[in-house]
Length: 210
Image (cartoon, rainbow, N blue to C red; front, side, top):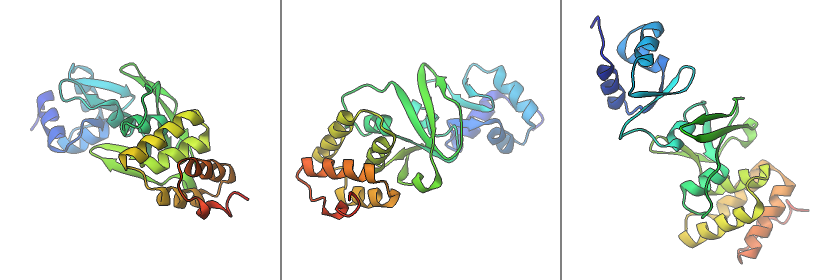
């Protein structure tokens, strides 16, 4: 096909389940050059720009901020307070969406939502899953990341943990295992206190807090 309409591109993206994409993604799908695709995207009102080379589909089927934030950098996943909101275990409103990655990336804003990127070592990069098109921390890892990085405030983490217990969506044993894995005494002490205050056996962390 010598000439490709924007609708052809949108249809191809839909068939590949891609609502967040790069110029390279489209170039590979439709077999056109980056320059051709860039010009096509620039003239389209159906596409929103995240940053140079990264775009998302607008309209009724546009992706939510979680899908956008978790697909800007690869690999990465959303964690901390934004994850608490994702799992509906906090009543507070998200101010910014925290993305954990092993690469450096400057903070950006998309559709009025602030997205920050926090770089951690590979030893901390685990404990996430894919839900639909969103890469998100498990409840346990979101708690550990929050305690490790000191954000949000401890009272918010306590609230989230309590609500997660109530909803039966957190596994205390897995939380202990993840805590031991990162080998951080300060985090171990906070998790120990978190478990103890909720009447949960925390003896598995006894050695780690000494």
